[in-house]
Image 1 (tube, rainbow over the protein chains, first blue to last red):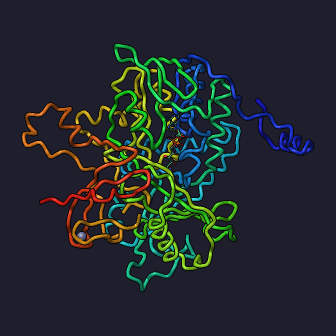
Image 2: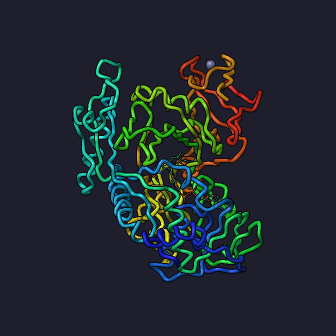
Image 3: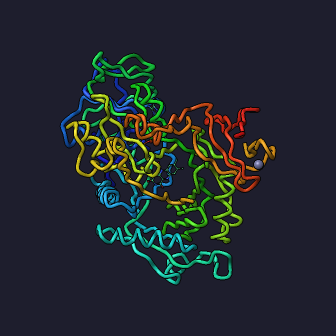
Length: 415
Length: 87
Ligand SMILES: Cc1cc2nc3c(=O)[nH]c(=O)nc-3n(C[C@H](O)[C@H](O)[C@H](O)COP(=O)(O)OP(=O)(O)OC[C@H]3O[C@@H](n4cnc5c(N)ncnc54)[C@H](O)[C@@H]3O)c2cc1C
Ligand SMILES: [Zn+2]
């Protein structure tokens, strides 16, 4: 594999960048593998990488119905943070933040991880109580999430509207300084390139249409639009489509799919230096290195596989953006898009083996970009050893057998 | 789809309504005697279909009626004439 560095960049500049090696191969689909991973998003590709790195399992195929990274991994707003509520979740997501800190070096690709901090702007007392509780939970786990004063909010976000005489004035804030953003494509490409170099095969335009099982019920492989593929272990990592793919093995999961959208503006001079989250207004925004404002709002209220924006929801998010930042009034939006995310019944993810022997699942991701490194690593562990890693043991499917919920209230813009 | 057809008020803006989840079969009266997996599936199981599904919608900022209606999860379009109000 060609290493990426300043020198390879200079060397390739001399040949007008026409000599770069392909980042991953496009091999023939074989009839059998040890492990098949359905879905080449961040989680599926990271799982493939850690199967090879940590467990020496390289006879692996990642099957992707579209193009690599074209699902939610390529559609998200890349907030990476660990200010969750439950002890198990804070530990899990904090481990992910730590892996992100090392990831550029580990994958030899610049993921542009920018730990610029996230500031929550609080405008209601219930939200203040909620985030105070979260900050206390974080403190117990050693994660750096804490409340700040209104003055401190304005010091960190000078262009925030003066709302002190409005219906919902700013009454405080919260900050996680290690929170940040990263380049979404680089995560998918980085894991794909390293997994490929370790021997994993990535097959795009390969849609799984069925899951094959023995008379005793064990998984024996998958059906695809390009023919049958045998495998003793199959992992479902398909973001919003888990219900449909799990149904191929008669597995019913407590999952519901929703449409989440985001939008990006034309580039402007740097004006917001942190990620701003306004849970009471229902909007969050950060500014990319190129200068674009990247913002999102709430999910569509009813379950959905639409994967495109809806005007009424976009309008709500834009209204909130202008209310919090009147200075953006005349900024033009360039693009908006949607993605299908999922919520499990208790809003915590599921990374688990299933009642079907040989079948594994990673799903229930509504904010799963931040979890890609640790999610991939713990899923790989679970697939390789047929038992959970201590960090994903709380996210097993069996928790529902006794209705032992791991309630994780509140997404970024929860309303 | 920005309009929801309320059986009482007719088509009203979506922001007046709250989605109240998939329409499930009626709650079993004898929950205590059900097998665990049947009860658990009743409580947390979801069909989550990609396509037409029957759901509950609540006209909370309008007449207050809770009704069921069919909607396509791919397009968000309501199926005309499918609304059923409780009698
Ligand atoms: C608008 C938006 C904003 C978001 N913002 C954030 C954020 O700020 N921070 C954060 O942490 N998370 C965020 N998320 C969530 C995050 O994007 C996802 O949780 C995460 O990317 C999921 O990764 P994945 O690998 O599981 O899924 P994906 O990247 O969606 O990959 C799944 C893949 O499976 C493929 N697939 C599906 N069915 C089949 C089949 N039958 N056969 C073969 N392949 C199949 C799909 O084509 C897809 O490529 C956001 C999501 C959206 C939509
Ligand atoms: Zn009504």
